[in-house]
Amino acid sequence: MTEQFFIATPLNFEELALQEFKEKYCLLFPDLEVPEVNSLEGGFEVNLPIEHGFLMNHHLKIPNRILVRLEQFKCRDFPKLFKKISKMDWRKWLVGQMPTIKASCHKSRLIHTTRIEKAVVDGISKYYKGSPPKAISKEELDIIPTTLVFIRIEEDLCTISIDCSGEHLSKRGYKKYVNEAPLRENLAAALYYFLTRDQIPFETIVDPLCGSGTFLLEAALFYHCNTHRSFSYQNFPMGKKLNFDHLPLKSVNMKLVGKDLDPECIKLCQENFKLAKLQNFQLTTANALDEKIEEYPRPLVICNPPYGIRIKQSFKFSTLLNSMLKNYSPAHWGMLIPSSENLNYDSLSFKNGGIRVKFFHGEKL
Image (cartoon, rainbow, N blue to C red; front, side, top):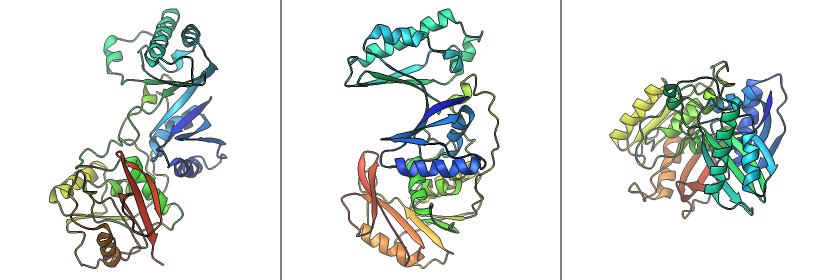
């Protein structure tokens, strides 16, 4: 059975996320052609066999979440919305629970999101009365995580989608310990992929301001299947039967080198690496500005230094970069800093925690 999926991505990372999808689809299904994709702002739509779409939750590291498009129709009044909802086949997606409804509207006659959400709840309630779900105890229903249904009405075109991810996909399940102002995991994965997607695999990944280890974790596990957490699709009637291979899509053997001036951050890193079952790493308490040349084979150096907003900044970014280039002689490097700074290198702009930032990057000529 084929369904249309919407793979939601961080803004400005749509093209990179699409490249990740195409690469990993080829690795997962080498005998199949990559399906056509409809690119949109904030993500892309693609028709996939239902089990392939569900499986993407475990393998894609850049997206925010994955939705299944259930219905799309013209709707200009609440009675029609209620009637349409009440006649949809919810047995494929729900086992008797009432999902959380999230509505948005733009240039539509239906402008009250609260009334839209109520019409959907009433419609699903009527559906349950006419098509009672299989018997399930209240205790079982109570432990099922909240299922999200999104209603988007744009110029009277109503699109109904159900979330098959659950928690934001940046929540990996293998990183339990965080320090102040951490970088969201899917953004770290995107920046790592941005630097490495067209390169020979790096033998060493160095983060001289590693914090709780986000960049290093995402680099090590980018091609791994995530089985450290659950996803909403696993509570769908059709999702319970999905079986798949948990092996990594690529065998990437790299050494992880993390340094931080704060010994507490190194402890957090060590605990996170244990939870992720990583072994080939070196973590030390050190000042990123120390003039000590480290010999690592073909290193990639990547970091997210303090911006001076939530964590005190005690150096100039240009000084930090010069120290990185001198100490490690990186084959490639990347540094994420506020957009108000300028390092005279190529950069990628986006928002990190509401702060405008630039990811400066370069390579050894």
